[in-house]
Length: 122
Image (cartoon, rainbow, N blue to C red):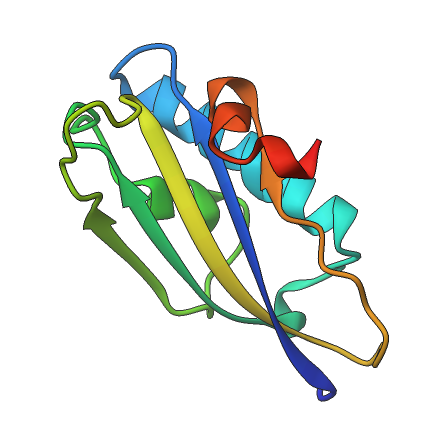
């Protein structure tokens, strides 16, 4: 897959610090990002960088991407900065991808409580 390179951001929150909740929320976010940005298969993906807040330590968000079939995409996880007053239980992602549409409008996706991070997108 060639074409122009795009970057899309997204975030979601997790109801509890469990493997299942982290995986479910991450999969929901990635699925919606792909749907809204017409990312149809792994060959379009270049990389994905995940951060999570320090209260989410039960699992890696990138593991959910692997379980979705993103087996050849470079994935990286890191801790979000601990800023006073920042949102807790939050997973963020930055995905780089290819698309042949030169006039593509990227749709950044914020779900659950993370919608508060980008009210300008609603």
